[in-house]
Image 1 (cartoon, rainbow, N blue to C red):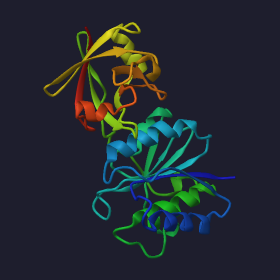
Image 2 (image 1 turned 90 degrees about the vertical axis):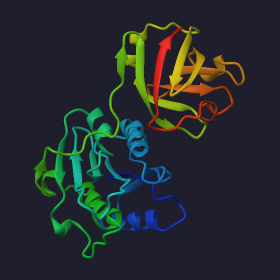
Image 3 (image 1 turned 180 degrees about the horizontal axis):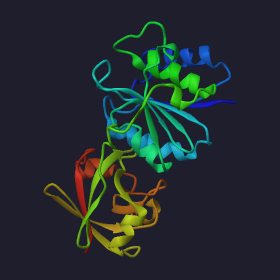
Length: 264
């Protein structure tokens, strides 16, 4: 049974998500559709990219992921399909899908040009319904990614870079703030180990002019109430947490801010 995931910044108030699902099911009625999230912050490609990359590894091989966070809709940016050894990604060429696809290994990117796999009428403001949904449905039915259009190599790269190191200091970026207020960075477990920190050791965190001290812990409950800590979250990224409080509010952190992390 074909499996399709959806991730958008459309929210749940309007009919946008329902319209996309209706188009998918009209082409591939046997599809199972799983919503990753429709509450991505409006136009926030970084947040959408991170959530997609976090969720995609848990889907079975052969899943078609349709992702639409698209401030450039109707403009010059291209609609694309990204093929990996495990999955197919359908969405705009703005970097949104690249981190998730790269985690699968080798990838091939195709510009969507064949009109026969799109809706007859294409709105300049809703390509999620008129291009991405029908293309994703056709792919779920067995269409090869090579049949959507020509392969391209000049696709837009990931919307956030890799962490860097200055001696024993890691310089990373906030890529997500979750609903608990945990501040999630792009610093992975393997890179974090380069700092050679031991559990319970104090860590200095600096962001702009804000400098705080936290403890490196295994899990949230290792912290005292309202205490700041740094830990490796369930998806393998380093995050700053505050026990039963919002670390983001305490640090006045926002996505895109850069953090410097080093041992005390």
